[in-house]
Length: 429
Image 1 (cartoon, helix red, strand yellow):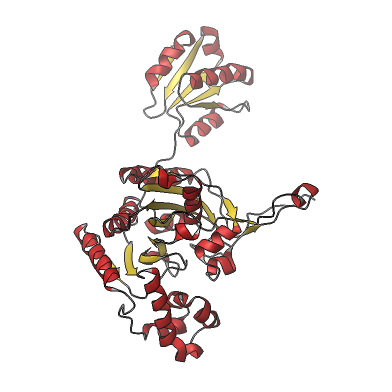
Image 2: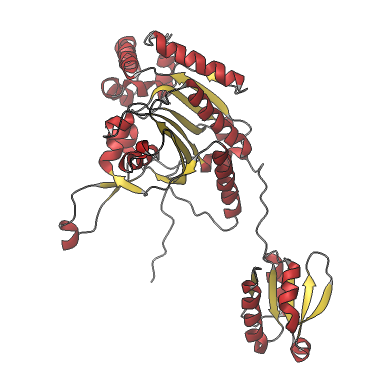
């Protein structure tokens, strides 16, 4: 008995009826990001595992628990192959930075404004809004000397405008600053000092994070850990004067752009490369997994991956989360077929087939049924395909070298000579 295969856990099929919405989201994203000066980049779906480990941090949850690595098949050819280990990309920033360095983009332009749209992969426990294969729209602005509060504010404003344009009306923005790399290290020391006497109150994961990644405790969703964190009195004592000024300036610029935000000193991102500005966008309609997107500045990552000393900031938005959050507010019409050709009898299928090809070559979409089914059945197919017109070939039409042309919107019908079919098709465009 043949095995029935099922969809891999944590993945979804995007069916034909769903594709128009996905195309609309991608098209809208491309249009808006082009307005902001971003150009599309496409990187591989997999990279060396070490790239993600170095960029996101060996102690990050993504690297420790969620990486989907590739296991090559055992063969003499693979045994002799390069020794690098590969993983499916869990996020887009590392791949874009790798490409930026490898293609020497810093020597070609002062500021590279790049965006990507595509699938990401994480070995998480599947649940609503959290998949093992998911899709993101992301931007990265990379260039020497571009650490500017104006660019930070523009990137954040861009993310909010994009979500609004995609029907996410309930998006709420939280912002924070981690300061410089040195400030961030001081922040970690202060946190350890404040939490050292409260380890017993923390979950097992956070007790391990205390030494290896203490900032992640601030992001834990376990109620006991959230309660312990809320008792901390954080007042940005780890920031130097320059970092405070930078953050204050950015907030004023955001206010000038009418971007509403909440300042959250407990907001950190789960990836190690962030410094200075970090932000997260959520929508309460999504439930516990309420994040729609997030981003921040990462001025040291390019040098840590072997590149030049340049600054960078970016964000990523989850397409599946966007679809859940917009709650059907985007009504995208299903695609329609221009002409459906009906053969009244099986012996006329060859004529219908030839006519379909002729219509397509003249620039309109066309299709037909090659099953020799009844007129009623073929009309149902035409309606299901949302056809604008139907061309009918029957005994009388074939004898007269004509086709019956029916307008499916108003029901009007006329006879058209097959000798004039090309001219008729042009009028239907």
